[in-house]
Length: 143
Image 1 (spheres, rainbow, N blue to C red):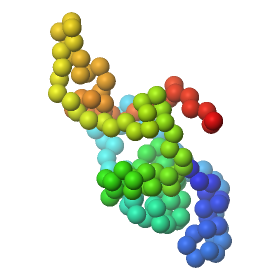
Image 2: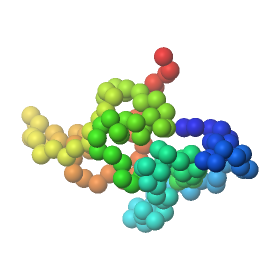
Image 3: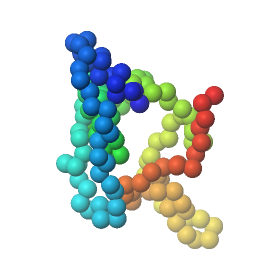
């Protein structure tokens, strides 16, 4: 994520714009979000705008600081274009799942004990997954 002060000095026309260094007040998540946290609660961004506009990127960062999430529309499906979009935000690092992890629903499979083995990881199921964080226990120090 880019430094907001740096972005504010490089907004399109090259003129330095005033910037508040105050961190936006966060919208706190709680157990009361279930069913009432809709797309309208987020700031919605166009992928191309985020790639080409520092101003849009700054607004995106402010939305992330406020809500902890944001919606990006029209993200390219081509892996090279997608990687270019992601590199706008920083270096892509491999995790214990590799560089890429595709979330796909797979048909149910039975484990040896007769249970549904496909439910061992929700990423492979068709169930709805509520707001959450992935892998906060992972450590990926700079190398």
